[in-house]
Length: 190
View (cartoon, helix red, strand yellow):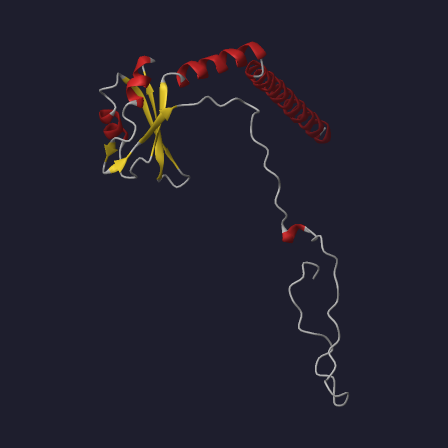
């Protein structure tokens, strides 16, 4: 009888584990459907066109400021451009280590402020002459083509064929050969 009870208990445990795995599979399918739905919304052409139009509208209210001092804070940049109009956002770009790159973007509330900000071109902030220009809108897919440079470590072969160096013979026809070959120069084939 004990063997029959153990078999029934094991069968119940297996049924319970199978039910848990089925529930987990249903939950995973629901999560995947949700993610696919969200990804589908991003790739929707109407939403992409609306997003692009929104970017163009924001860029028409923004300026690029170059040659910004590395110790400059967003508050100081905002104060410098406050006379042009209401500043919505100041973005000082940084590298991957968090240090400023030396340029900033300023977004205004009203588009007329951009023309006022362009008048501040070559004004000084922290002893540096600022370069102010209207922000351009990037067009997706319009990246300029850059030719690949050859990498000698990736199997690149030069255009000139390999030519071995001539043998060197001693001048008067006697004695040992000093070198079997002339000294080798760099060749990408070795």
